[in-house]
Length: 358
Image (cartoon, rainbow, N blue to C red; front, side, top):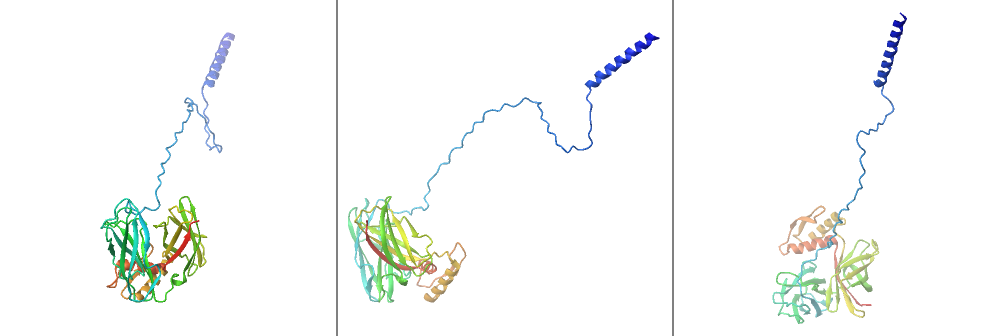
């Protein structure tokens, strides 16, 4: 009996050992029915750790900078140079109403190509726009002008019957209508007792001139009608028997609001010290886009009264006017100039400033 009990005891102990061993190998699952407020981050290393490869940054190609001019140059006759030699009937010559006269310019072909008989002096604009002094629109050259040769060309003109100041502008062009660079010339006369120093009491005074970086800069001041944004236009420099259009300009100081304003105009030419020069200011005007509605209404009222039969409707931003109605004696080009001048309150000169390069 004692042996049987000992045997059973041994079996129980053996069974207990097996149970304990098996319980150590079996996982115990614990189910938590309440959500844990603390998030547990588990880091798994089931896969091999990735090797950090060196990163090589390949820079993108630098963009190619292309210099684009702000203003596209107008096409013109190549291989020729316009040289102004002289003229008859100086600017501001006073005439009596109805007189007939001729203005003659002496010009030199300073280039390497011939001005043949297809070249002509073309009327480009006038002030007032509807008064051209009876000038032909196109005046052919009387003869060819080979490189280095001098030529004279005259225009027959008729003095208007109304007192005032009148200017007609011309330009030398070839047979296809291309202009010769810097070839603008003009005739300016007064009729009756009209003083030359500009309309509306506008005057100009030369200050200084300077040479820098192959540009000749002229500084001048103008007494203008009021403190608004008046600006000079059709500015031409004459020196060494040639004429030049400005390459840039500015008002000094910027944003000046007084009636007396000063300006700097630069020209793409080198002028030697002691050389005489002349600066011609064609007109002053206000920017028509500022207060456009008021400017257009003013132009309507003024032009309807001055030119019976001329009419138009004011347009919104991006267009000056619409529904143009012309008098029988007026072209669209003349009407365009009249309307723009009226909207800009244009005052025509020219004002002539003479100086000596420092």
